[in-house]
Image (cartoon, helix red, strand yellow):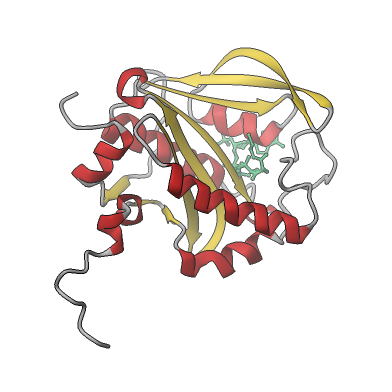
Length: 226
Ligand SMILES: CC(C)(COP(=O)(O)OP(=O)(O)OC[C@H]1O[C@@H](n2cnc3c(N)ncnc32)[C@H](O)[C@@H]1OP(=O)(O)O)[C@@H](O)C(=O)NCCC(=O)NCCS
């Protein structure tokens, strides 16, 4: 391997989210890199929903496989390019035994002022019902509350998405009203959820955070001492 020229800064310094690694129980969570995209594309071709036309099927998942993969790649690259203190999403890939099994996003708008995070997640069908959904949500909540200084986390699930409700209840979220959104010409009712550090049910697994550098904090509007 040729030596790295001294004026070449590592990619993790150019784009600080690449340095972030969060581990809990069997899970390792980190941003997808370009070399992960073939595994990500294969993951996206696997079943995620038991009932393909259920109201909670994601609109991007309902597309044909090729379009789904293209849109998912655009999504990953768009989130990188749009990461900014005013509005950010950290799209974590979830690895179990070295294998990518799903995704967990953590996002915020005006985090420096609001201190509120939102989340969304999915696992392939064969990995569901093993507790990973609750563990990955607890892990990003621990990152948000204990390391970034969040004071509130919000989530929402399509009414009737029992597993998603299950995750929110397991993590200590409380019901926070409903809303109706338009999705592909259908009216879909969402249950909103909210959890704070006081109501958060942490579970037993320890959460290890690596690579939360001052540069990354600054990008997220989560500088220490604010
Ligand atoms: C939602 C999702 C991420 C949850 O992950 P998971 O690994 O299947 O969930 P878990 O195994 O951690 O179970 C979560 C909780 O729901 C409960 N649960 C599981 N299946 C359930 C069901 N059919 N009815 C009610 N509760 C259920 C579990 O008992 C568990 O609660 P507990 O920890 O108190 O026992 C996963 O099912 C998924 O990817 N679904 C498809 C995509 C999706 O709907 N994403 C959410 C969008 S808001």
